[in-house]
Length: 244
Image (cartoon, rainbow, N blue to C red; front, top):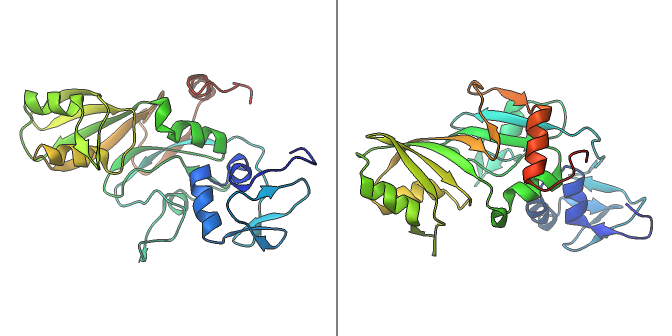
């Protein structure tokens, strides 16, 4: 950070690997971020030499770039909080128990399982999460009813949910009760809501891929570090410097 040129607090938190800018705005609003002992407000700038804390703990940028692929089991919540909607939850960071600060990139709902990426690189989080970039996420889904050709076509062409229509996507049948789907957006409980529109109920949902990263025979509840090759390709797709 240049001495006389501050940066917005949400960008500072993102670059420090604390969380995405969107999540930063939430924790700033909750009064959890302070600059030189004063609670930060949205849009506040941080200048060279200032002390920034989250929940009273100083923020020190981790120099090591950490990229992790985790096979999230059902029941684990993609958050860093201990509670959600007033209820005690097992969050993904505590479950993994990694020895350095990492944060999940996006969410995978509690009743779903599969690939979840975690990192300490806020800029990576931002680029993967922004739907306008249309990064692919692939899922395997089982339903309670027999799958028809009309269902597959309807899912692929776009479905009205949440006051919008989903983007056209790739869908193909696995067998009578399961299919694969590739999305380029991440609406809340999107696949479940899309299926419900056609009268289907999802009984099993697994995310198999995010962009070029796959589960790659990862066992449920375990994690692995991304390979250098995976990181290089991921950054290439994100139009980011490979060496940065």
